[in-house]
Amino acid sequence: MLSPVEWTALAVSLKVASAALVLMVVPGVPLAWLLARREFPGRLFLDASTSLPLVLPPVVTGYLLLWLLAPAGPVGGWLHRRLGFDLVFTWQAAAIAAAVVAFPLFLRTFRTAIESVDRGLEEAAANLGASPWRIFATVTFPLARHGFVAGALLGFSRALGEFGATILVAGNIPGRTQTIPLAIFSLTNSRELSAAWPLVITVSTLSFILVAVADRSSRRGRPR
Image 1 (tube, helix red, strand yellow):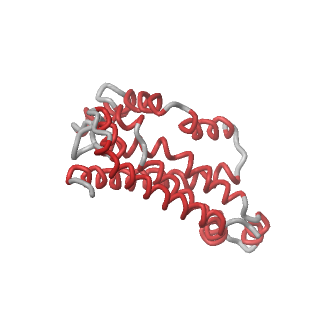
Image 2 (tube, rainbow, N blue to C red):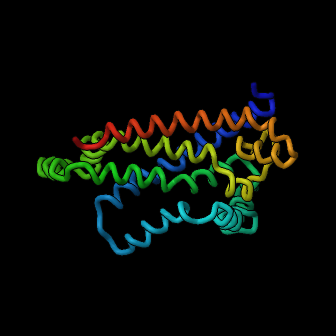
Image 3 (cartoon, rainbow, N blue to C red):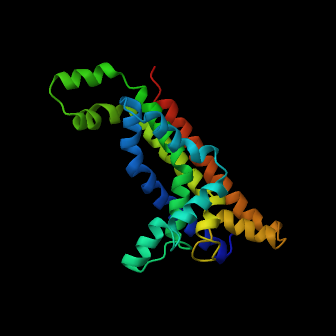
């Protein structure tokens, strides 16, 4: 059984992960198509840059985001001057951190699905006069939809469990930015190891279900 504080941490986690998913999908869909279907100068650099959060320590990612979003930083400073809004130590900052860390999982999964689509079908649609946008919407995406779903579920699951970058840019504020991993961290720091079990079981179960569904969706999308 979860306590009221733990239910709040679960609610914050779901809110942060849902917002992170939107932040992943909006740039991730066109970027996955671009990397899968186009050759252009700087493509290798862009591909490597978008994969960096997979290999960088999360605290390094968090440090870079803190520099970027802090009131004295390039983005945070502009928001502070123009809107009077400080982004750091808010749930929005937690969502941004989770999105950045989880983005490569969504991008690479969906990109692989697009690459598996038969180019001949796209070329046939182009020969019939379809625009690139119409080809993507009616041919490419429907055939790669299982990869999209798998990538979204993996990204959501990773965002749900994000810790290292989040604690730097959003802190660990109960009821505001304290997600499940941060709540577990607080409990273990106070040596209440047994009290963390309900949260550990909850997040492990959610993650297992999401990964299992993502794997099933990925398998369904593989060409036979």
